[in-house]
Length: 185
Image (cartoon, rainbow, N blue to C red; front, side, top):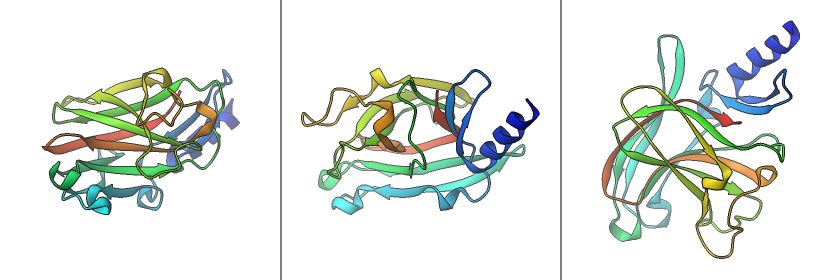
């Protein structure tokens, strides 16, 4: 058990995959140890939109977290800002969904998943979550994710997930969402 605890400690620091004592495979990012090398910020400006924002990496009470802030605008057919990471290993097919610990400005945000089948830039699977000013655990099963278009499967398969993004999307608003942990269960 001590070896497992040591392995999980490494994963908590660097964001990686581990297997729990119960055989459950998890990927966990806690935004420690150079998270800017694993996470990228994107906005609708890549498609001519005018949304602005940033992701910053902070620390509070010894715990790291990511903060996505900005102005989401639907002008010029835009409407999103996000931060995203590529997965460094394949998820087990029996992985059930996405888990995060989050807080924010009492609004709705989204998780976007890209898979081996989302080959076009505008293809993704999307599920929403609500935030409050208090840190809250959110679990989103893969069955809650909806495809962005008809050319995709109705829901993502765990083993084909290639990236995960936290997104402010779809309406004009000021975004402010913090994520302390994100992974899979």
